[in-house]
Image (cartoon, rainbow, N blue to C red; front, side, top):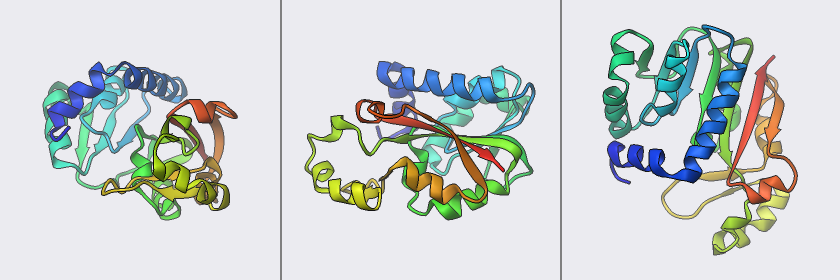
Amino acid sequence: MHTGEQYHEFMLTSQRDRRVRDGFQKMALDLLPAGADVLDFGAGTGIDAKVYAARGHRTFVYEPSEAMRAHLAQYCHDEIERNAVIILSRPVIRKVQALTANFAVLNHFEDHASLFEGFSRVVDPGGFVLASMLSPFYLGDARHGWWRANLMNLVGSGHYPSPGESHIHRFAPRVVVRAAKPHFRLERLAPRGFGLATQLYMFLLFRRV
């Protein structure tokens, strides 16, 4: 998946990813007050943004990848024309009620403390951050040597990097919760318990304090 178009088509046709996205969108939309503004952080090709805008939420989108951003501009053309979707060059805008980060966007960042400090300047008090992140406990990854080699890191620090040039990191929920303080408190984690071992993605809902 080298282009925004290829990524877009894959995400729309993958049944597993569509189920994850549907669950994420439902949680976000159930939480958003009517007419509330939202920042889609790491918006990809605008699949979530288009849905939020269709439900009456002005959606600011931040996407650092030029290829993704180009396809987003095409996919959300009508919404952009009527200012229902607004592309940002940097994720610093006036306050919004919510910030969403779907499909492991936060796994690209190693320093979550600085990240959540930045989020605190964007999200209104009482608002929320909803993120889907890769579960570090997912047993489907146990076939990989890097997963087994990092078990002690997971037990100890709750954090380990994935191999290669992806710059992906995996975090236990407790690590992200600690990094989010004092600006945010964890309100919901799904799934919990053994579900973290059977599901690739976990949803973390943080409330701005």
